[in-house]
Image (cartoon, rainbow, N blue to C red; front, side, top):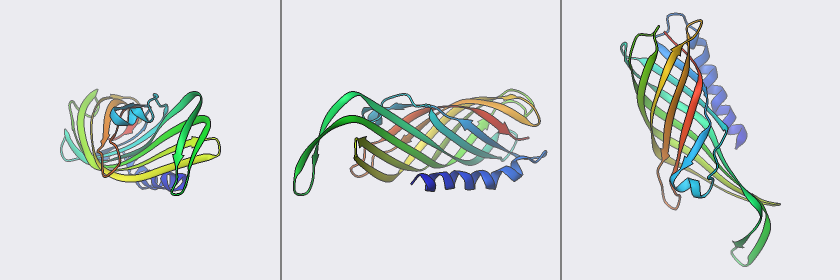
Length: 205
């Protein structure tokens, strides 16, 4: 699973980087560090603030202010029990109780179509707002000693965002923003929501 997720991110970066370096680019390409805070249902499973996250964003300018594009990334939410805990595991033919230190993980990979509105000119400070919609790959895992269990699902979700780009150097900007991810509940799976706090570099016009 980890190899699959890394392969997706590497492929997207490899596709975007050659054109993102163009001096006359008519779009933005961003790489961000994205720590996150779980909210809603998922906070009952993995409720700790997470420092693990990366974001990739490409925006193709339709005019000076409006863009369409795509957004992806990888966020890992995590929770560790304070000490040894016990859980009852119900199998098809028997029931067992296991004890140990418990670790819970929620992995989220969004693949979203986005649109943004930018204020100001490309060589100025540019605030922006945006919205995205698409699919979320969600993997949730529990580890206790030698025992581990996980569930995978793909759900529809949305993602509003806002931020500011500050001109930096060599046709790049410092990008600081916040993005809310909401993967909706589906079948027997609860919703997954989290706030990503993005900071990174953006290359563009």
